[in-house]
Image 1 (cartoon, rainbow, N blue to C red):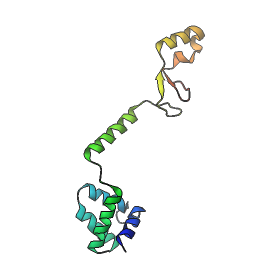
Image 2: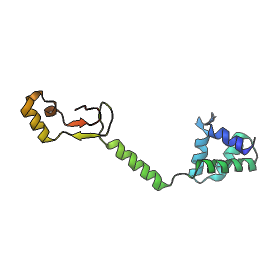
Image 3: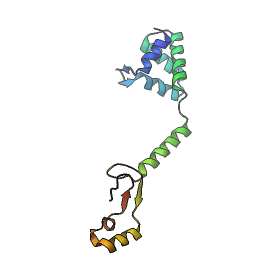
Image 4: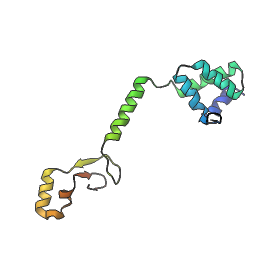
Amino acid sequence: MTAYEIWDQINHFIMNTEIDEAVCNTIRKLQCENKDNEAINYIKNFFKCDDETANEAFEIFKKETGSPPSPQQIAHANAVAREWQNKPKCPTCSSTNIEKISTTKKILGGAMFGLFSSDVRNTMHCKNCGYKW
């Protein structure tokens, strides 16, 4: 088996049944932990190839997948995800394009339609679907 055939196998997410995980995930984890020799040995043992072929396959893996994210990139991605999760969303369409119904609009709606005004009893309005809650 050549290094490119090994890369093709890794790239198609073959599973290691002993650890019930995709081979590419295991190699990536070892790469992120700067355990290149262990990653090469893993490839060598899993695909039953020689050292040179395993090393070539690992080099192809690194070239094709790029370098692992830095701790700063991971922290930034986590911060963006937390910010997105904490944004209020419309319960109907999950849009974040919403606005608070102003007190002035509530007073005007109450004056015109009394308690039948939907603005009086609700606090938010979705600009996408128009739902009020």
